[in-house]
Image (cartoon, rainbow, N blue to C red):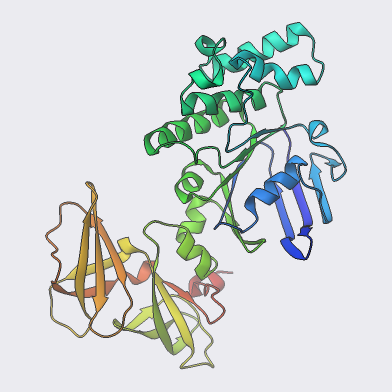
Length: 368
């Protein structure tokens, strides 16, 4: 296996700057997921690592070697595509053996590698079939097997599950996770599906407009997003956002007035010299509390979604048009049209400044 280092990586297509000064280190054996909205550059970044696109500026290293000018076959990478890209006229065996034969491996090595990979992916009984005789999940395993049979240093996945139905995606997600645990491969995986990112990754790289917005473990990105963009992108349902105004601040925290909620004391540290500063409060649906008590912060339930094990309650304030989502365990007695009071679990609240950067927790900033 090998590490991957991206140093000020840039990619320009004509007049369009796609990848912008990306710095990233992927450790040996790590499972790293690139995630972000369509057009953010995640697939382009993967293709730069694979050598399928040329680098405009910056350095890309695999292990100890700069590989900017190396062709794909000399980089020690195996790639699994969204479209499977299997040869329809070849059997499963021949598809998996193709890369080895192209590399002029001897027949004994080809046989050994293909059979080992087939056993790992439970494809032994399918080796004589052609792709049209396989299900979507089986074709995806063959595509993985073709990449794995060459024993690459790095496995690259470009949205490999997007063509599968929901139940098959869950199954294949589990198989990919188990495969990584068994082989300890370095994996770089591209997806737009945050569930895949959260369940598979050791480390998630959130991309936005060709730049890295935040890098961290799934837990870090969910619990301590660095920006409002990350907070809104990671997590389903999305984080709730409400306009807020700074009242007072000191080294222990701050007091803010939140639209529709009232005054809250939070642990974040804001600029002491800027009372009246415009902020944004972020709170995840599971950290909102509803009750029927009277109060000024009244909201009306406009929709209730029952998902079996949990319930999503959609709320509108008496004034304004900010739609909030509350998540709770089922069963639930909340009804459409019901007026409720809303409480915020301040221990789990987030504050973002005018530039959408998260404010630091006061106790963390002064811990030293």
